[in-house]
Image (cartoon, rainbow, N blue to C red; front, side, top):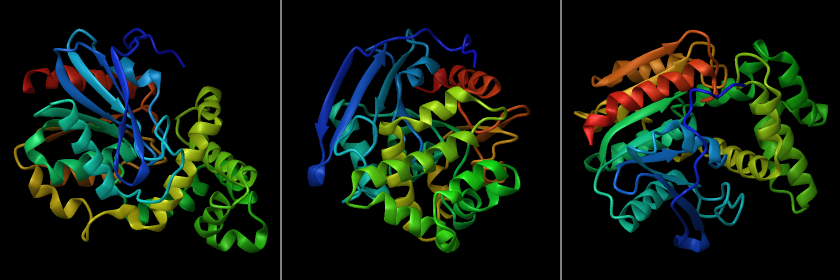
Length: 316
């Protein structure tokens, strides 16, 4: 997949590991201009972790980019850790990092689960949010989880069949419960096999056209273990969101500008959620990319995200 419209590869100017509560340790890094406009990147999943390509959405002469791996994800420790891992904890972790880096207000930039966490954080701490750029909207509702587990077979019957065939026939009536049983099995080999099957399923459905590169990235053990274990755990617990869900609390974002970028053919997070979010967020601009699926690296999506960043430059 060509990525010529992203900024060149760049390394961080600062990295670190930040101790959190209950034995978790967060990996974080800063990229770009140390005196630039602060933007916080929130990765998807939950549990997917961030990668080097995510640095390339941001003009390094303008933005001070803060990237971190959420509890149990990526380079944070312990990998795949479920204990004391929930959305309120992640919100507190963002506050810990924000205070550690001495940032008062920042732009939020997140896709998929990253959009969920960005909204949850902004609703809890609107005073620290200058604006939000969100992609592939996931609101953490039961119908969205059910779509992922079951509805996707209407569009990707082959990928869904591979996903469910990992389980014996008698266990396919409870996909989530029986995957979770294997993802928490004492045998690390069973965990790894279940995680790879779960993660490859998600990667296979994330782009408009088949992408070997996307599937290969999702199949990597570090990505798969964090993504599958934490995602299944969060799905079993209604994403640890407040009663009424995120849409019921959108009044807390009053006055905060938003940019919503949504692939028309996003099958992981269908466009209905983006439309509903835009209807509940008066200050948000909705951009539908007509020839894209879910991935942030789809050509039209990444172009729209970079354009949104340009429009937000003056807000900090």
